[in-house]
Image 1 (cartoon, helix red, strand yellow):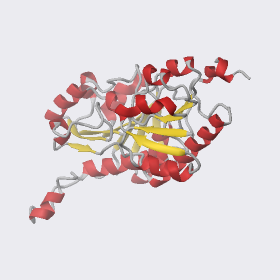
Image 2 (cartoon, one colour):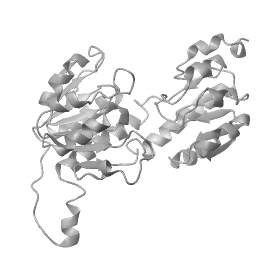
Image 3 (spheres, rainbow, N blue to C red):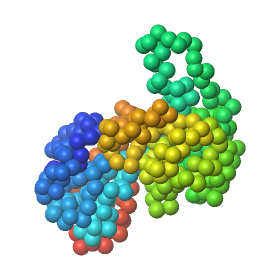
Image 4 (cartoon, rainbow, N blue to C red):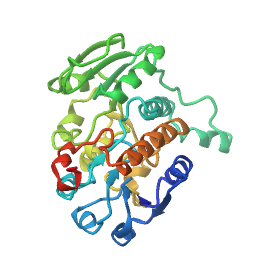
Length: 326
């Protein structure tokens, strides 16, 4: 059996995959070779590669499209269903991924508050010393947009900093107790959250409802001096609106682990702005999360090989396809 990891980035995936699935061949290939290599592949792991209808139609042995993580916006699920191919992911919550992303959020909030990485230059130069005066998280308000798996784990980690927690989510009635929120409301309270939060964390998926959620209107509503932290998806933020906001005084800083195009263009001046902290989509890339995700991926591969529907299958209607009728 041949397992393809589509795309040459996220190099740790192939290491963890081979470690946990030693009995089968696993390959990590450039995105432009997926069409050719998919012809004899049984499993495709998309990572950041678009798995479209053309690829699926030219993969006659394909039994599973399995994401390494949760995001499936790059997979043509309709085409996969038509061809009897299950599409599955690994939930963010409970795998170490949500916890790792939450840790990144805390790191970014502190880094922005203390003016990293620019303050390191003072050490290298030898001056100025003892400046700037940073901002403490204590007593500040954290606004979590999307109180799901990541948002819940983030809330747990912000409580020890004695921050005030507010949040919005699609279904606010479905929320674990004891998280220390002053309030969690529906998405209609998004403007209210923007006006109150000193730190705004984007912890929700990108879809038709959330695309460019942070547009010009949103930037006009945010509290003066607020920080924006995005570990979710680049498309949640309108690029031009962000660029304009960075030139004003209202937005104090932005941390981004995700972008409108990945990998980014190295010469992109927006990402080199002194108010911007960037990392290469590594918020959830830790030893803990990758081992847990690997176990979930491998379990699904083995289920598919045995003729069973994988866990967290997003197109369970595939069962009605002739391939699955026994």
